[in-house]
Image 1 (cartoon, rainbow, N blue to C red):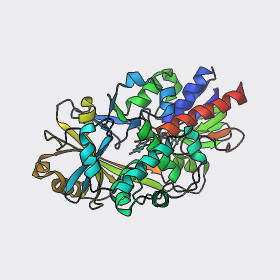
Image 2 (cartoon, rainbow, N blue to C red):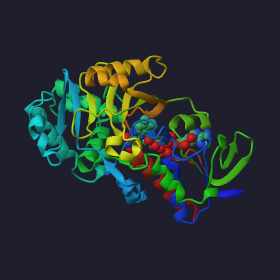
Image 3 (cartoon, rainbow, N blue to C red):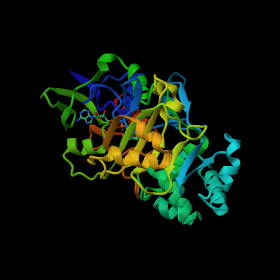
Image 4 (cartoon, rainbow, N blue to C red):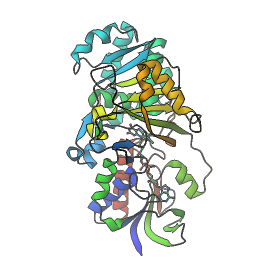
Length: 415
Ligand SMILES: Cc1cc2nc3c(=O)[nH]c(=O)nc-3n(C[C@H](O)[C@H](O)[C@H](O)COP(=O)(O)OP(=O)(O)OC[C@H]3O[C@@H](n4cnc5c(N)ncnc54)[C@H](O)[C@@H]3O)c2cc1C
């Protein structure tokens, strides 16, 4: 059987590519090694809890989400616009006064930063929202840590706020990721909210896949080799395409094409706990580790943002630990619990440990020079193209965009 396009991978980039081809009436098949769509975005159901594979959020400001998703059907539940920073034995709430006027005083009086830092924040927020989003990716690029110093932020504020905040989003505690990425993320937080779909992050790929005919996605179909338009599966069967799109992680692409591994993967462990306990703040702010001590970078309370995450009414707690070094740590749960006892008190002893996800490749490193995500990578060969994070950037916005843009190029080539 020959298709116009064979897509390898049913993550967001592969699904977005397939949906765009479908609109243009090109024939295609999606080959997915796993048993469900979504790739790195999955939600498991366990003991009455929705457990996302690693703490992730959908930013309501992602332009491509507005374009590709039926946002209203996801029934998004928004995080409050602020964070609780654990620093020097206390939690300090830093909140957007437009949404949380009651925290104006605590925000202004917090020891997290100086007046100069607050003014630099306002300047940064204004600058990242100027012009079209794509313009950010043409700005001069440097490592975020250097960029923040150039912007006049104090070392204390960088350590207490930017390190845990940016590390949480880019999984990069050294904050050496590109200053363009920082500006893009800051713009998303300034112009929208972080949100969770009511039925979990896995509802995003589920919604996209549901728009495709069931026979268009072949699950448990691992591709072993791609040779021009001939795709060979691990069971030896072959599928032919006028074009082939590799919509997998960079590591999988390198393996398929027999290229040397170039990827620096950033990993994380996400430990889920449940308890009748409630956090000591009225809103379910994301908690950031401003002390830099202990394994936990941030803690979220998904069920207090999106109640469907817990059917029992218990609080679901997601503790995120960054880095590969913890992936094989035997007593990680105990280390995390000890840190949480220090932060929240002895009630943490009674938290039930529900599940731990160790994710080896969550994101690639995003140190400069990074690719402009609006520019598609050159085709690998006449018939093979790549989409997803390869020569682009990781994230929901970019996976959806690269899938759509790749399909649009194929439409012009094949129609
Ligand atoms: C813990 C974590 C937190 C994150 N947080 C956020 C966040 O808050 N906001 C945000 O925007 N982004 C976040 N991301 C990033 C975002 O989830 C990814 O960038 C995006 O989902 C990648 O989609 P993709 O389609 O490019 O790749 P993938 O999701 O990796 O999909 C690739 C697919 O290809 C399949 N595949 C691989 N090899 C083969 C093969 N040989 N044959 C057939 N199929 C194959 C895989 O099974 C997979 O389904 C996070 C990611 C993780 C893991």
